[in-house]
Image (cartoon, rainbow, N blue to C red):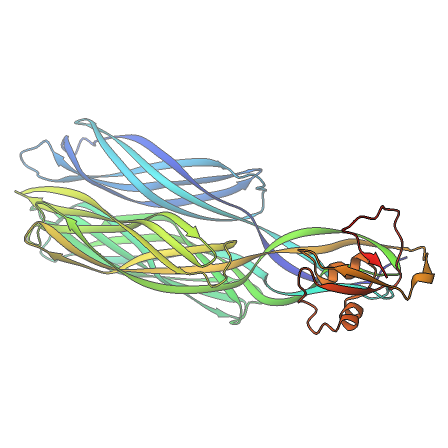
Length: 526
């Protein structure tokens, strides 16, 4: 018999894999002939760029570089500070079982540490550790069965779900350019360090377009020709448009930013400025909230139904939260005071994210790198301030996706006379959370007529004692009855509530005897 099924199609962005991997990039660098020998390194910092990403069979390939600046003490009587700009290239294949060409790849690359050692006066060894986070998605058009139209006495167990149905995805390259002015009296000799952070991210949706907005906060420490260390800062707007058909301002949009290339160049001496150009890729996945009614199970007392089910994991109930925490700590800083402190580089190193049914906990360190002048010699000291903060898990479920960004706001230092610094930091955590749900989707439904036997027992009842894990639906299906009939006979108002040990009378719709031996746990026919 041909079965007429009511179906609905939804596009899903199926999460195939999530993975984090630490890679190490090592390279030796030669000091150019125009620079003096290296006596000792003072500080190393860098920014990561991802040029190319590719999804292949069971692996992901990522190519890019770490743009580093090495401040060093020269072996020279004429200079007390110099710097090297080095590029560490990397190309990494990461094993991701289930990966296939054409899947959507979202990555986040963070520098965990950069080490520098002096091999000899003309050569240094650099080693950068990079954490690569991978989210891999597959677009899939899923057809769900939500009703059966031509089967007599069909009993269906349906459940309503709110899912995020994919509208589309896209990306764009944004070129953000700016000229940062330095003191007009300064003649720039060298760039000592560059720090770039993307902040204040926002989107605006209109029909068929996503406007992405962010700010690139750039801080550059430089050396003047008269051996002074100065700092210039600037904020560069990052604005782009991504075309996605049928998107409206009612939809949900996830935007990911990734720096592809960085160009830092000193302009002519007369201009007293530094040119900054960033190439940034903004990628977007857009969803609409959709309510679906899905058949989870079905049967009919008058026929044999045969069907299979496939399981699909979807995300739903996507929400965003913004939380602020005040971190206060006393830290030891011998030799550093407010008069000799040149600059402080700060960043957050998240070590672990724990998810329980009640909360999401972030553990890590606030890393402070103090650049200071001690007896006319520039030096640095790195201090780690551990933190643990928690936010509410609104879903009361540990099986959720958590995407986060942590930024440090309003960093204050209070220098104490006992070589201690009172630190106060406002930490802001922007969190995107979605609930994972597993859908069992009916597939390949067939019907065969039942041989109606023992019809003389049609009016008899079965006395059944409720066991752990039972529901009225399971009991009705087992005995070819219906949920409505069992509820009516037993005076049950809420069919979702029955108790273990409760006695139920089961009216038989069309009971079929089975050739099994009776034991104490089987129902008695009355």
